[in-house]
Image (cartoon, rainbow, N blue to C red; front, top):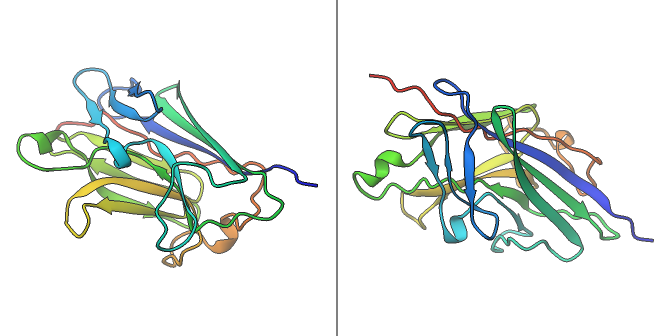
Length: 219
């Protein structure tokens, strides 16, 4: 008899911090991805389009396979968002309806923030993933724009890894992924295999992540 197994419950927070406590307000597209997020004043976080658009869940089944936004057969997922306190919270839920364990190479949250810096003055409003770090028990980091705005990223729970998405073999970054699950080898300071689900996941694995901030401007 097949039973649905809850693989993952994850919450990702985008937050305002130093200048304004107002949360980011998303402008969503018809497919659920964001066109942009705005905060009090002139703070704005642009989001990418096309295959780089987010937030969205993607699964990569094996090495060399292209990540897909459609759940594999026997797997279901949903991604919702809501303002909670000072944070814009993304909530992901993944359910395995197969009789056997599902072991993807990675299950990623494509954050979708537009990091593409093509030319001046357009690049002044883009965010560079400046520091991202997976620890054994938590995750944190930030992206910063040349204008001094910050997009904070944090999680009190393990995040397996993260991925910067470059323009082919170029040096420009399109956006970045947070790998909620990964079966690929990781550095020693990343969560150990015992901290991450391995095929059959606990009923509730909760993660709080990106928080976007309306940063301080410094002279």
